[in-house]
Image (cartoon, rainbow, N blue to C red; front, side, top):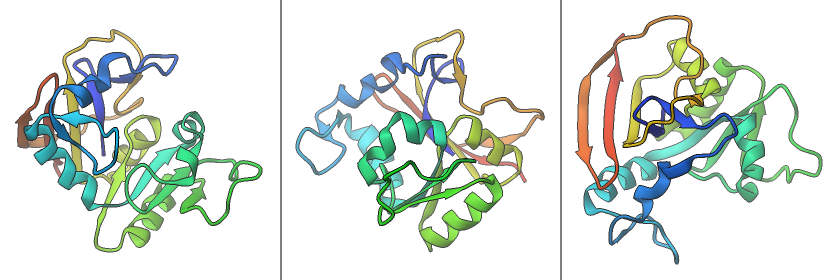
Length: 188
């Protein structure tokens, strides 16, 4: 489970604005992707973030994120497949050949994503759906890219949780510019 987050645990404001959460994508001189107009991050952020992105085989997101991004134009933002947790089918006119899979249960989403990812990583977007998967005990690792901003209110990294879950000590801590990358194993 991974995303960029404010110091107080928010991934967006109530109206889905991300404010300065992605500003660190322009604080360095190292391209994050091998494309024109790639975000440029520090070497430390690149060396932490790029291998994580390359390892993703399938991404799980909620329908809200899918709708907000208009399905990324039919191309998953990370990995080869995107599993969308939704009680609604694919949008009218959606290209069925796009590597997006719509399921209505978080457990089914995890099983399908594991199958699609093969020996690669399943990445789970934070937020309400990510929190449901986390609370179900189906998350092995939590990765946060903490940006030094306090939102005060908004959409929480873990969504609404009904129980406490312990994490191990961070097994990776990387200081970037305007971001601190943290990775924790979930205590089993």
